[in-house]
Image (cartoon, rainbow, N blue to C red):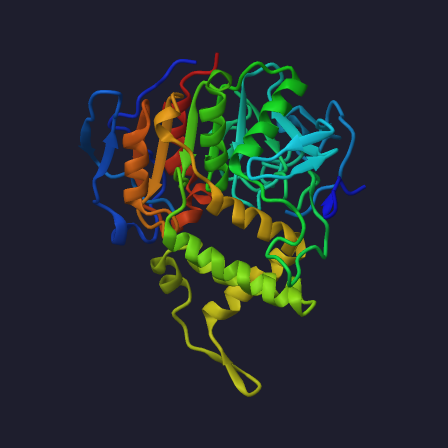
Length: 413
């Protein structure tokens, strides 16, 4: 269809009284001492338990390649994990939840980790892709703080599966460059839902010959996709870890994203979609991090740039916006930003044992929303943490998340 492009070139371990350990954060004093509340809701009762606070610790666009058995050895080949990757040709017609369809869609995927080990699917925000960690250099990849040899999600014990989202800037099917314009916020590319991403994942598992996953671990939008998958395919995933992801978006978060989308659309109408994306991403960064972090890092005085002053936080935000716009397309941002706000799942129908991780300083996903989500899940556990990184804690808090992942995943089979 017009505006569509193909590729370019288990057992349950409850979380009770668990603390993560690690080196102290420079901001720990401001956030320490708040109680962690764990909820154990089921069909008939709820239990609240106070324990010690967890201590505070402080894409590029990949090219499409045919499936290969392994990457060439990197500089630390002794730690390199086996890797497989490829591009799945989906059915000729892929119907979408909100109407429309994708024709001859493609889904780019990557699997890294110990061969023959249980498979965990790792999913991130709308800027994430299939390169979760790199086999040749585990320090690189969008979730390299969490995933890799010896990490919270240990590739010595698990295979980790990632894929490029439909509608995104990676090598899966997404909107054509230039599709954003004055007539519609998304141009001509159809709306994509978290259920559509979940259906794509189910087809990928079929392609890989995997009856089920040991777990899905998702942060932000990835947690939304995980919830959608667990609702639709409970028999295909044993456990779910959801970090900073609700069953539906909060209206305030939708308000912020709506403004960002309007910025991009207005810029696109003037032929400056990527410039609009820079501004929208700069604004988005203010919602991803906490007020405490921005105050600690950018409290300095402004510097003069010609006839105007530039503030330290301003310089940081627009640097991040410019970097984002070099790696992502405005059209994909519009598609996946909208997908976040379209997200709705029925938590009462998610029967997979689920660990919900809430960050107290998260501006986008209020703590009360995740407490309510955990209460509605038939087999939910809530773990509250504090982090200077706010919504982005799922990318940064390796020490806090390590114990949570271990307890949620149990021992690999």
